[in-house]
Image (cartoon, rainbow, N blue to C red; front, side):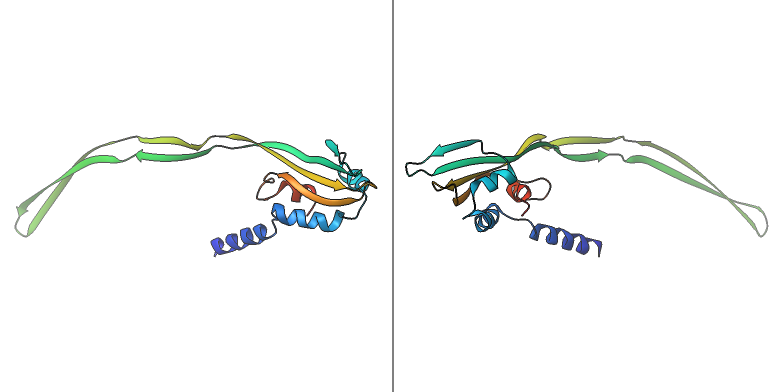
Length: 170
């Protein structure tokens, strides 16, 4: 029952995760037709701009830059840890008097143990993971956004599929 509940929680959590395409579509719905200055006021200034012949511009914006160390994945194998031994039981039956039987048993045992040996194998080493979101905004000569394109989007923190979804609060 616990496994089913855990699986249901994970499924619900993952269903809420957005992909890069979904975030880009949502951003286009929100920002196309809006002044580019409004975007920059809300999310910060662009990192570069490129002037177009007709007076428009293409801005490159970057945000959500962060990093973390993904821990190594290690597989442990344990061998040994067994006890080896033997025992011997001897019984002696006597009849000290009529109608009386005495049985004496002695058991002798010897054993020794093999220590458990654990071997760790690194399946995947620890790695530094860089997180960021980068978008390009095309604007007309009046500074109105005509197109929004996500040009770089890394995984998010934890189970998130998109850093841009985290940055833009999608």
